Length: 143
Image (cartoon, rainbow, N blue to C red; front, top):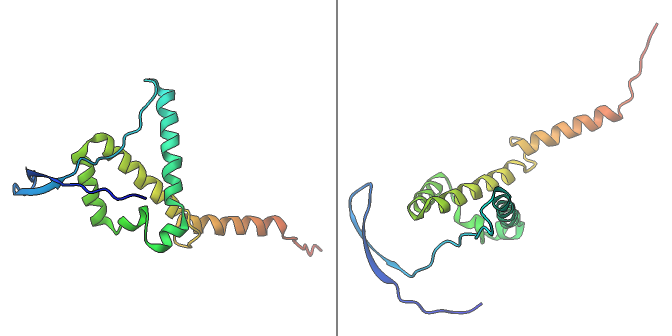
């Protein structure tokens, strides 16, 4: 860990929705876009797989989720997600698509938790029923 002192550059921009002029500081930090080594489909699939597994690792760490730090700390609800989506869209289509992929991975992980109302809970019940059906012995009282 290291400390860096930066001085933001002043930037003025008009909000496209409200048409208000806003002043904010820019420090020149942006999203890191992965470099695709080739231009083929297989190169893109490889980079996509790597990015997805890396983001899945960020989502599924219980210690960061429990402490309220890391990736899950910034996601507070649908309004925050909508605001972050708007910010990502203003930066560019690549950032927006990356954010959408991150949200999809997040929702997939949370949906598979073994909580009864989620798909993971339903899957848990189905597995328990299948296990019970496979190991039950039926007794037939035939005449």
